Image 1 (tube, rainbow, N blue to C red):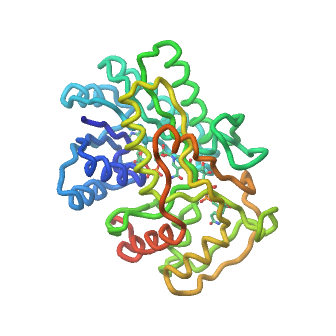
Image 2 (cartoon, rainbow, N blue to C red; image 1 turned 90 degrees about the vertical axis):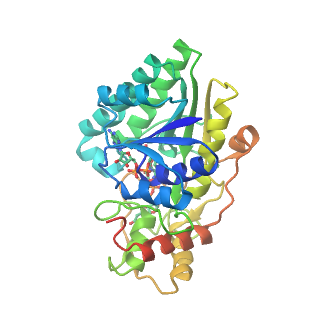
Length: 336
Ligand code: NAD
Ligand code: WQD
């Protein structure tokens, strides 16, 4: 089976490529390298001893996609490509709509033309907005508060419309919670451009002395220690969820939607405490104002993925922090 991985050089894609190759799939990757480096592809090849067929192209370039579908015998697509920074999406919304929405429509049109109708899509827990209760199940109401989130919800709607028009499609919508950590080898990991927006890459840079202190966004939430609570999930567990989703598409399930989370909520302070153990040093922090748009608590009910895919996250926050620090200390400047 040959899988086209869009955004194939990115953080979650590189870990998924590794698991796909280990599971015996062939991998074709397309990435415009707007938020990644080709080095991640090379490292996955090094770890697995297998080759990835890599195309440095933009998914909005239809001719490039047609060329790939003509050359490679694609059986299914895992669609990671997209811009993902919430704050940036508020500053440059048109780029987000153009990249994420136009890119996806382009991809779907080419898949349709080549009669490749198996798709796994990277959605996000952001589509649940500010949930009234936790844990969150897949049938919770959907709402979004920023352009990034809106692109995810719009793409989900497009996929639901596509499936109702043509039930030959098999589509798995995966709603990720908060992916963190890195492969245990320390060879691949998260490598954001500039100052990180997300908690874990920020902590990693403080742990390695590149940034001076962690800013905790709010210490007065209604949580066990006042800091925000999230469902942090190890990126390797998340990647293994994609293998299960691809297998599921083989049963022709139609359109299916799964939460990929651990079902456990951990606070920002819990993560800092675990990270201090992982790096064996005290991490300076200050508690600042809440970040606009943030919610207090979010964690998944992942039982649907367990019941229907046989998938469950196995790695705890100790391993997530350990593997994050291992990647950070081996690669203080990321892939560069
Ligand atoms: P990432 O930025 O590391 O990966 C995305 C990749 O897509 C990058 O390599 C980028 O260069 C590429 N890309 C962007 N636009 C492209 C285009 N038009 N054509 C070709 N390539 C393009 O991000 P990630 O964290 O690995 O996220 C992967 C997917 O998962 C994204 O769709 C993201 O929205 C989604 N997601 C991520 C998280 C998270 O917290 N990391 C949570 C939920 C959902
Ligand atoms: C986690 C917690 C912050 C940074 C985002 C997107 C979501 C999804 C995952 C893509 C929060 C706190 C953070 C810092 C802090 N991405 N924090 N200091 O906001 O839960 O989710 O990434 O789909 O859509 O919104 O993740 O890592 O930014 O924040 O205190 O420097 O850490 O307030 O409580 P978030 P995050």
